[in-house]
Image: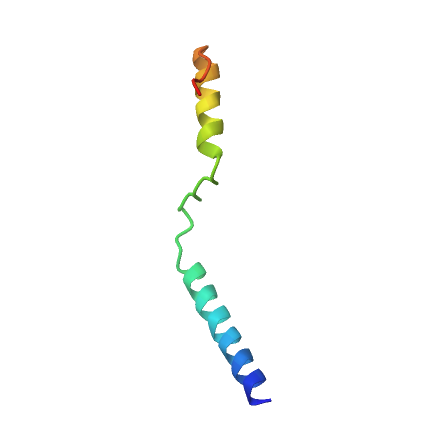
Length: 55
């Protein structure tokens, strides 16, 4: 029973810390690209220039 109480207290504390950190992030921050987006962006740039991407 005590372990369950401690686990719940730890989870709640971690949640509150995460919410506080997220709230401190300014609104004008652009999110990071997901992995793999670099390849897609390079393909679009190459296609716009009329060049096939080299592999």
